[in-house]
Amino acid sequence: MRLRAQRDFLVGHHGLDRAAREHGVGAQARFRLLLGFRALHGDLRLGGLLRGRLFLRRGGKGEEQEEEGEGGVGQGRHASRRIRLLGILEKFRLDGRTALITGAGRGIGRACALALAEAGAEVWLAARTRAEIDQAADEIRAAGGKARTMACDVTSSHEVRNLVGAIRTLDVLVNNAGTNIPEPFTEVTEAHLDGLLALNVRAAFIVAQVAAQRMLQAPDRQARGGAIINMSSQMGHVGAVNRTVYCMTKHAIEGLTKAMALELAPLGVRVVSIAPTFVETPMYRKMREAKPELEKWVLERIPQGRAGTAEDVAAAVVFAASPAASLVTGTSLVVDGGWTAQ
Figure (cartoon, rainbow, N blue to C red):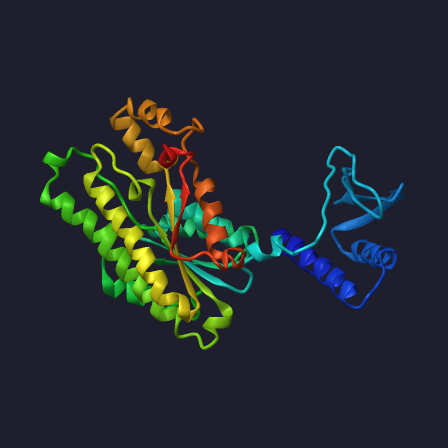
């Protein structure tokens, strides 16, 4: 509820300011108008004005935050300067949109679900383990967001069609489910080969195809827009030892992304891949436990000197899903700390 109240306040504040500007209201009159709006808002009470600066007291706890008023920039401990020129920050919002995230029970998928919900989307979390996605959905709802869950094995086309068919209007897909089995090329078994191809390539294709079909059922798709985000990897751009099959599957995802983008762009749907480096996830931790020297090998190859976090990737996903990326399609957002720049 608190998150929703804050969002409603910001939307109302920006809308009032925009309407006043469009009707030619002068700067001083606009300032007084917005002061009145803030004073009436339930979360805030007017503390006072000093040299054109507005002080706001939050929640009656005596903590002051200084904001810029007419002709001044806040200098307090919590000083911030908020201006509106192009409305860029609003373009990162996903209010009124519905997003589906596969592999959403843990790691990157879970972070993407939370981030998209924070951006205002209603999120559908899908994974094989129901308990994990239910826990993530509970966290989203507790913060005031909208979340639904559905257990799904994405390697089953039948389950995928049931999942997507349950979503009334689909705007964003985060095609995230995937795995890796690091091993030397000469030791790869056919079972491992078939398993990775089935999940990382075939299932990714089917999920994207079914999601695109659902998106295109919306009569206003051209105006509404849509985004399919395929979770790739830096290994979709380079090669690495002990990762022949994984590299093959992620190079396939990069090719799929480009071809899909060309077909879907005229229909109002963008397609983007996200290519992270090694990220602090349960899968990466399991790899480190099995091979302790892996961490040193990884960090030596990342110029920024650290592995990624799930939040690093989720931030890129929010951008790619949002209207802020309205001209971004058929490309890959590489979140790798510089790995592939070498």
